[in-house]
Amino acid sequence: MRYIFKFPDIGEGLDEGTILEWYVQKGQSVESSQSLVKMETDKVVTDIPSPRAGVITAVYGKEGETIHVGDPLVEIELQGIEGAQAVEEAAKIESEIHAVAEEGAGVVGTLEVAGNNAFLPSSDEGIETEPDNAHIKTKAIATPVARALARDMNIDINEVKGTGPGGRVMKEDIEKHRTTVYTKSSASAPTIQEAKPVEIEPMSQLRKTIAKNMLNSKHNAAHMTVFDDAEVNELVKIRSRFRDAYSEEGIKLSYLPFVIKAVALSLKKFKALNSEMDMENSRIIYKKYYNIGIAVDTPDGLLVPVIKDADKKSIRQIAAEIHAISEKSRSRKLGLDDIKDGTFTITSFGSIGGKYAVPVINYPQAAILGIGRLFEQPGFQGDQVIKNNMMPLSLSVDHRIVDGGEVTRFLNQVIKYLNDPVTLIMD
Image (cartoon, rainbow, N blue to C red; front, side, top):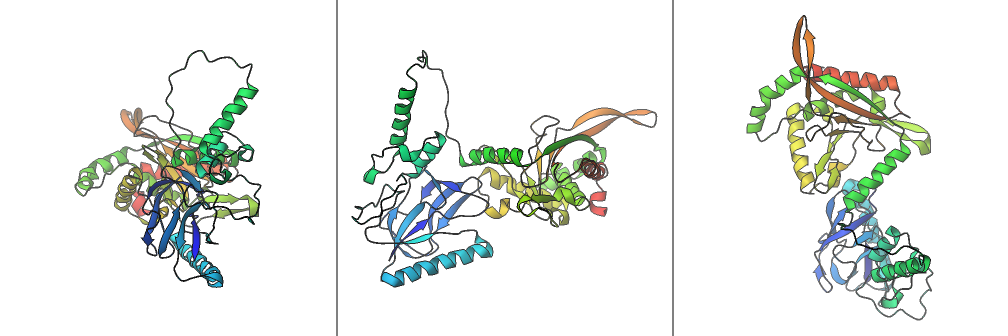
């Protein structure tokens, strides 16, 4: 029996990935659950395991290529299984994979039984002559790279003549087609006199996802932002008092753990900010768990790992988790469990600079809080002028879900906790 294992849906809305490293090659024997390939999706870097033991008869896609969920990954030969038994075995394997996914593994693969003369439209390897009675396809046969390039250039790939094996459309065919069309349609276009210095880099999966998510948020949520300042004199003293002791344990004590705790406790009092709108079913889903996502700046872009059940954790526990997931974020070792099920997001840009911003909601969440750089301003204590430490806050909400009054009351509650940090453990 020979079957095709396709790039699986690994959850969290991921629909494409980039091949980082192949662990197997044609002719190699593999065991069940053995890693086949390392894939970079728009959120995580993960290994894709083999659903069965067998021999690799074809590998589809090269390192660096972007492929989509449902595109072939490998073809595997299982010895001694043929005919109707092969169909039954494929159905059994697929059922097992779906069962694993439902238990939380998050991998749903697609299997197809392949005959000895199998012909796959997404590979440059393992292609055999197409049989005479093959069904005539109206859809273009193309490599994953060619399809991605055609989408980026807004080219209908079905109009491109393929020069690859079996008429397959290659990357070079897309580029040639674009040049031909441009030449025909721009005979009167001005001649480029001088090439300007530019630097071009391909967009990473992460950057493409950030762009997509930002547009999705702006198109689907009615953004409103409220700005305020929290006086944090006591918070500054407490952090200063415990910072060295935490540091000796390898824990960096910033202001962020206090803000996370303050937000989590405040969300319990104002449920609309811990919700999402389900337009398809005309309802609002209020979440009774408090998982706070924190935006982490990495060399590859912004990642949002999640502190689970922040309302139940101590400042020490939250600080330790922040350190751990920040390191995992920067080394791209986050797993799906690290980034899913967030209910509210905090972005802290104050460590870099800037007081206020208009944070973009991490849709479909209802709100996001931005923390700016602490600053000092004069205030009064009786007749005396004193120096106050102020933390600027920027709260963006989905105005379809949250009204202005509730936004203000929520922010006042967060400020109250930060103004008197003892209440974070006493309330």
